[in-house]
Length: 307
Image (cartoon, rainbow, N blue to C red; front, top):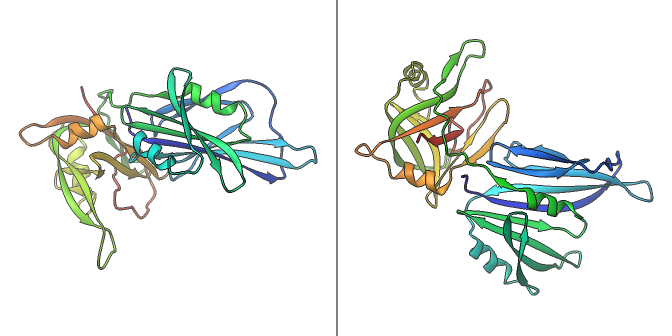
C-alpha cells in the first residue's frame, strides 16, 4: 500500500456561477496515482492538479443571489506520523481529542479553535500501516466530511500484474508500458541541480538491471545515454527520504505527479543487492512532450515488486 499523508481542508468564497444539483447520489473517485478511492456527493467535482493534489468543489446559491463556492483540498505527504501530528496540535491553546468510529475505521478526532475567524473546528486523524490521514473539517462542510471519511479505501498497489509490454511507439516516438526486470538498488548522493554553493544534498536511487526479457530495453538505455536519470544498465527510481522511496514523473495523461512507495516496498528495494537481487515491475506512462525535470524525477511512475 502507498505511504502518504492525506490532508483535506475546506474554505468558502463568494463568486457568481451556477448552483449545485440537489439530487442525493454519490460517486466514487478512483485516485489511481495515490492508491485510494473515496465517495463524494452529486453536485461536486473532483479536480486533480499537476502537483499531485485533488480539489473537491461545489457551489450553492445564497439567498441574496450570490454563489458560495466550497472546496476541499487533498494533499499527499509521507513524512509525518500520528504521534508527531498530535504533538503539534497539542500546542494550541484549545485542544482536546477523542476516538470516533466512521465507516470501517476508528479516527482520532482533535478539536481545535481557529484564531483567524474565531470558530471551532475538528481534525480527523487516521494512521494505517505508516499512512496518516488528516482531514480538517470546516464549520460549513455539512455532511460531506462523513461521506468522504466513511468511504475512504486504501488500494493495494504493490501487487504486480507481471505484464511485460514495455515497447517503442513509432507513432508517438516514445517508449511506454510495463517493464519487468531483475536487479538491485544502489544509492547516490547528489547536489541540487544548478546550485553553485552550499547546495542541498539528496539521496537518489538507481535500479541496476541484471537481466530482463524485454526486447526494447537495450535500445531504450542506448537512446537515454547522457540522461541524468538513466545510467549504464540502470534506471532512476527517484529519491529516498526517511527510508521511503518517492519520485516525480510527467506524462501526457496525468501531467507532473508525485508517486510514493509504501514502507514495505521501499524496504525491500533498499535491502536488495547484487548478491540478493529483487524482481520488480516498472511502468512508464506515455510522455511525448519535453520539460525540465526536478531533482527527484524518474522516467518510470510506478515501481512494484513482482511476487
